[in-house]
Image (cartoon, rainbow, N blue to C red; front, side, top):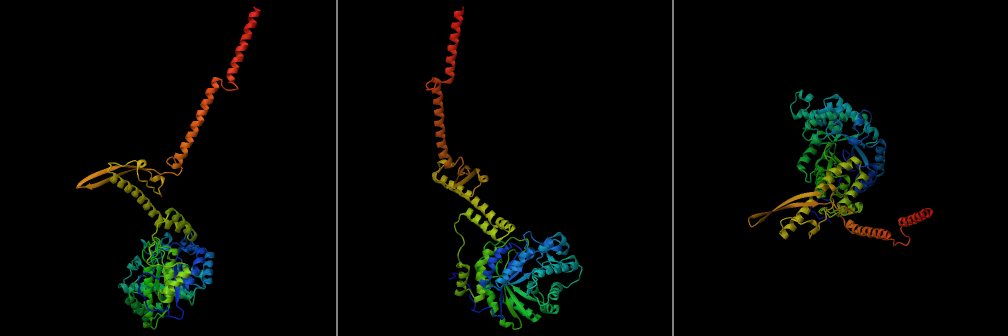
Length: 547
């Protein structure tokens, strides 16, 4: 059972349309998974209740020709796209391509070649809609993507967070009357993109984020004709939704002529820009709140809910840090999909999540535990390398692991100092005792050669309004398992020394006995000397006889 108290809406399903869709968002502008990992997760998506995938390619699409510079170093190949489509088809998942066509174009406008197309020269996020080359660039991008997705039924053109609109030099030279004209400027650009898409690929259904439409009046939106070309996707990722505000937006789109509407929730990537692990509670409450909106759709009879897109943001923008990775967000995705499927996260939904994922979801359970960090980090890197490309692995490790491990090493050193300080106070000594004579043995792991050296410490203790200062230094050594300070060296080094001394004594005895002639075979030099003396005597006797 779930041990967290959450609001429970009525047991009603997504029944705003005959075949409501539950689309899982794959944000590839950061930590794009390898294709072989998709072979594992696509069947899982389908089992959990997903009906399609919203693929936000960004720089992972294999652009070629003039657009070749847009490709990431590890961008998918044309064959990779074909394999992704094949895997999705096997799992009965519709692929909806997403290409940003206004805001969030950092991956394009960051290149020097396209600096002139920026709305504001200093910021590479928004396209300048008043420059003709802007639309030509988008047409070429859209053509290349559609060439590899000719079977697409839906296509998402993004268009959210169009920052600094109307701030370009071109716009400043055009007289306008405030927000109304900025809204028309926005609509005219989106309308041009939409007309190009529907004319080139008749029958395709276009989608767009509704964020920029919210501040545009109903009359202006209706006059633009855009509601006949594009379906708005109402997005909100907060745990508790403002039902009144969302209701007003739906009413506006209905009055402006929209026949359909989509909703967008979040299963990960919406709680913090640098979130490491996915919190279940906020995302579950977000989906429960959206279900409350779903049950109120009967208030808008002229507009039909087509489904919900479960977004899983990987970065807040192209230059931002990574949010929680997709594998970390899989349990949350399971909870959210089953909640949409069953109308709440009831016992049946929990049972299905437990059966499909092979684990029980405890929404209130802490993730902290005692681990062997070196082993965990090595295994973590190995698992990441199996799913992601090298750039993602290095970025995520640097952002979330390396810094934290350095902090742990610092804490380990501080633990040593605190342990020795406590020992000093207990024994009321004026300085630290050498580690060799200490009653306390403290082993610290995760140290390197660079951590060794002499550390100076100073402690001030308050004793009856008098401050006593203890200070000294600690020599921190890195003890190699087979180094000169190791038990191995001390034990076997002493034994080896004894053996060498024995050998030296034997050699000395051998030399002494040899010189005394005690050896059975005599000393070679002594024998030669005796033979020489005998020869000399014979010569002297012969000389005397001759005389």
